[in-house]
Structures are given as structure tokens and as C-alpha cells.
Amino acid sequence: MVKCVFCNIDILDNRSMEICDKCGISVWGPKQWNNIKKTTDEARDKGDLCLFKEQEENPDIGLKDILGKGIISDVDAIN
Image 1 (cartoon, rainbow, N blue to C red):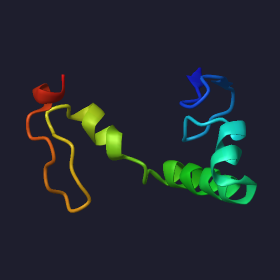
Image 2: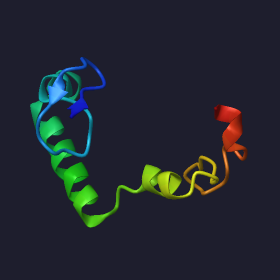
Image 3: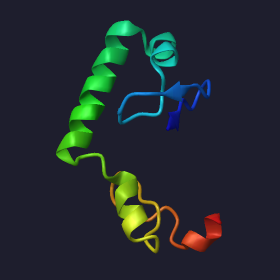
């Protein structure tokens, strides 16, 4: 079961973000929150949300910035 990163309440549905509707609406408003949920869920279903998937599959790669340059070259440095 997934918990909201803001209020720690259980999230019962299968969504791509770990944010409950109450917190999402209070941060972004109802229209923007619904759009954020829709687009992130669609991206997840297409396989476009793979930032951390690559790191799970190959933990030796460091974090990368938007241009693909290494931010942290030694993964052990963050542990």
C-alpha cells in the first residue's frame, strides 16, 4: 500500500504519484490536480516515467540532470 508523501494517509488506487487527492487539490487546485494525475498515469502506462526504473535496474549509474550529465558520479557518496 502506498502512502501520501504529504499527509501519510493510505492511497488505495493505483496511481503514478504518491499524493492523495486532498493534498493534490490543496496544492494545485482541482483542475490542475486532475490534469496532473491524468497525464502522469498516462505517461506511466506508456512507460515514459522511467527515471528511477533505470536506477533500480542498474544501481551503479549516478543521478543525472536534464542534459544527461552526471550530478553524482559515485552512488556510494549518497549512502
